[in-house]
Image 1 (cartoon, helix red, strand yellow):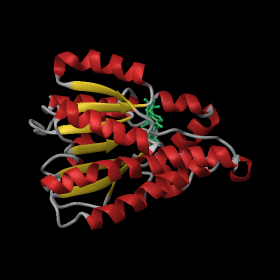
Image 2 (image 1 turned 120 degrees about the horizontal axis):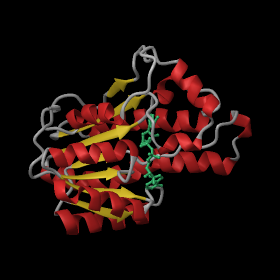
Image 3 (image 1 turned 45 degrees about the vertical axis):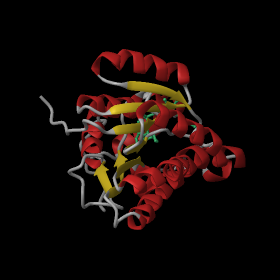
Length: 251
Ligand SMILES: NC(=O)c1ccc[n+]([C@@H]2O[C@H](COP(=O)([O-])OP(=O)(O)OC[C@H]3O[C@@H](n4cnc5c(N)ncnc54)[C@H](O)[C@@H]3O)[C@@H](O)[C@H]2O)c1
């Protein structure tokens, strides 16, 4: 029996929650009694995931492009109408972008990765933090990547976007530190999810070769750490980046 936290009465948004790491987080949160809004660009998949989990808790599916602020505002309004408020935000929506040298990224590819992976979490925080301030309660978990600390070759837009998420987390954490709001990031190593379909086998082999534990991290392992990050128990740590890199990170 794995540890869970008490999320009864808490309402959560999990971006990218239709699948992968986000879905594992949704399952963990409803397991602790939270009601959850899945915010995903793939609305059909979000709806399927929500209906698969319906027996285990309250889950609603909302179609959103986190890279578009008007779309995020609409998603917030729909979520507040459905769940009444938002206490917890997990920013999981993300894309890999091109596997190519920096000078081979097109400006459009660069912009798209930054827009989804970095501007997306900013949009979601901008839309949801004022409500958290009003109620003096909030927990935000931003899924960055070990690539944001290390800089993977052939993935500079991705690595830069994730380094940006770590910076956003540090700034916002300090801005909100006098409220009962915690803002933290997490830097996973490679997990087997659909995002790997966007990259080459050679790139996966490179990332795996860098993990001292010698294996991929499980989405459930990431979700367990995130559950702590968005629990009431995470009441002092803020602006911090949790490691789940299997020994790769040295800071
Ligand atoms: N899987 C890994 O190896 C790994 C490692 C480190 C960090 N991460 C990060 O974890 C997060 C989740 O990744 P995953 O492996 O679960 O990927 P995934 O591809 O399984 O899931 C990502 C979800 O995000 C959604 N999404 C993409 N763009 C969106 C947008 N603009 N608006 C709304 N939703 C959007 C997708 O539809 C998808 O459902 C990402 O931020 C990723 O960069 C993943």
